[in-house]
Image 1 (cartoon, rainbow, N blue to C red):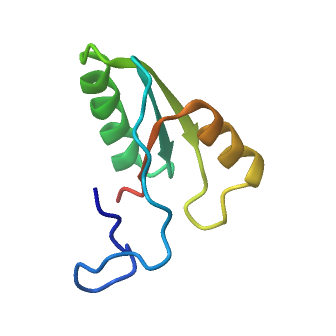
Image 2: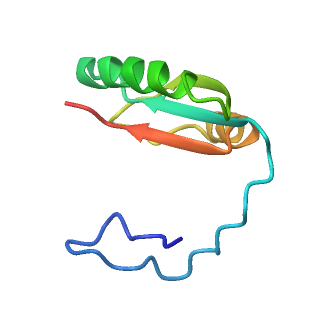
Length: 92
């Protein structure tokens, strides 16, 4: 597994990223952060529906975030406390 730098114009490994550890859960929880754009709301619903069909998904939880402001630390704590994986969608 490789972590890519989302700021890079071309694919580039993310410098200084912690190595990913194997997930040992039988059922994985996925968090979806929605930037409140209408397009992301639709995408989040489709992703949710498809994830819930998978036998190894324990749950899917949604958080609404503002697209123009930093996400509050308590929301990030909730996401990381619940999720094995998270999807951040900006939409539009």
